Image (cartoon, rainbow, N blue to C red; front, side):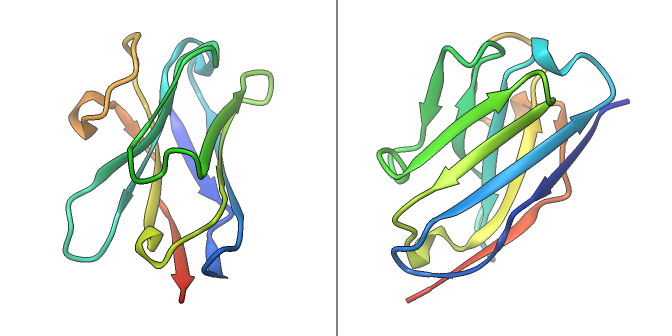
Length: 124
């Protein structure tokens, strides 16, 4: 069984920074690609960023490229999302996800385990 727990969400103003964390427990975390997704009210869940098992490869949605950075610490079984220059359109519930097959994918269907989500609200 795998358990993912997100933290770090909150209310920030436009232009501020925020760091989300995802703590993993259970099976072998270090072998899996990880990703962050987000879902705003009335919208579908969308890919934000992904990272390979080693951290050597990353992928970002165009909407966050240059502002967000995904990273991981396999020794701590954790993945992070550094959000800089936050915008009101970044407001959403942010989810951490794990994929048990190699390769970063942007489709939510490709991920096997999900956290419960953490709310991020960016005020203008």
